[in-house]
Amino acid sequence: MNPIELSIFSNRIEAVCEEMGVVLRRTAFSPNIKERLDYSCAIFDAKGELCAQAAHIPVHLGSMAYAMRDIVEARAWAPGEMVILNDPFLGGTHLPDVTVIAPLFADARLAAFVVNRAHHADIGASAPGSMPLSTRLDEEGVVIAPTPIIQDSRVVAPMFEALLARIAGGHESRGDFHAQFSANRCGLSRLQLLLDGLGLSDFEDGLRELNDYGERLARAQIRELPDGVYQFTDYLDDDGQGQDDIAIVCRIEVQADTMSIDFTGTAPQVTGNINCPLSVAAAGVYYVFRCLLPDYAPACAGIFRPVTLRAPAGSVLHAQRPAAVAAGNVETSMRVVDTVLGALAQAIPRRIPAASQGTMNNLAMGTRGAQGWSYYETLGGGMGAGAHGGGLSGVQTHMTNTLNTPVEALEMHYPLRMTRYALRTGSGGAGQRSGGDGLIREYEFLQPATVTLLTERRRRAPWGVKGGGAGACGQNLLNDRVLPAKTSFTVQSGDRLTIKTPGGGGWGKA
Image (cartoon, rainbow, N blue to C red; front, side):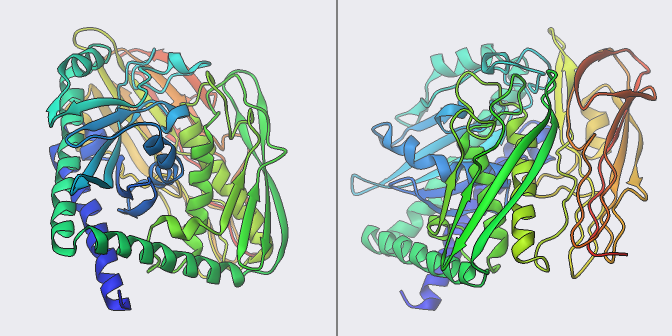
């Protein structure tokens, strides 16, 4: 393909991912998917190498890119089937993120895969919202090893009904699963049209050329970095089970056109659920590296070829079964980003921003029983400032790319009232460029409920760069009483929960 043909090819397969996302959003039942957009879509080749992805959730897409090859190699694939999974140690991230994979065949040959991953607010955990204060994986909900959910283009009813029976929000969950199936059917249909026009041979040639082009761009970018070794250590506040100041150590070595990232020295896996599988740590690394590349770089496996990753088995970034991982996907992935950025700031300080809020401020709540409900959301905060501009305020940053749940949608679906939603003025770090401000979001409960908080940056503030000040730490309050960063509790009608999210760090001396 010439450069113009390759660009058209790249955009066509990326457009398939975008259309899959539109179908998933428009057909989903839960606000978590249709309002917050907590889902991702991607295309992989027959070997499980990433070909294209939509601009969805970085932690979803990076972890899929890292784990998909092993998933593909582990089974024999058949036309007309879809495979479902959420097992963090077999290609998933944490249990609420459910992945559905569909193979595409051409001339009886496996040609590609379409994949989507969506967050389910209820996956049968011990606490409503399926983000419990857990110590073992089996406390976090239904664990799904890679299993056919559709065969011969029909839903495998016994498996599907058994899954739904273990999830409290049956009607809503059923609709969300069917939305995922529909998104994959859309992807298969659109990708088949592309194959019909090109032919399988030209399609495979296009994928090879796209990956080779991505690799050339990646190596060129690494050559712009000064050779050397750069190390940085950051810390997670706690694991919710009594262990504080959990170290994430990152050592980056840049040599010619290659980069190695080594997390040796990182804390061992812990009792609480901030552990994560290696695929989630890889997602954080891939995200940062992707940010260094030009906007036109294709989101394909080729761009990651010059990057190698190591994290010791049994560490908090490469946890072993049956470690609890619910918060690892959301909170530890954010600290991986902070740590990698902190190391790179030593090499290219004018290109690296200060730390952003460094947490997703996970809030899960609901009740059990026939009329029970489950709700989950993440909250924005302050973005770190950079050399060329201050940080944005009240936004989702780094590993999350979701929207907020609109107040109207939240109050329509759940027994909640939003009594305050505002920017947390002055929470951004001072500097030549100021960090962005966090948010204040206050909920009034109209019925008793159980609430779980999994948050970070409540003790250790988001750091500044080049003399910039730190952003303010976050704070959780129930009826004006300060709560721990990670906690589970019950509320009564009339109680008010206030979440104050962290600000971003500043850049340069004020």
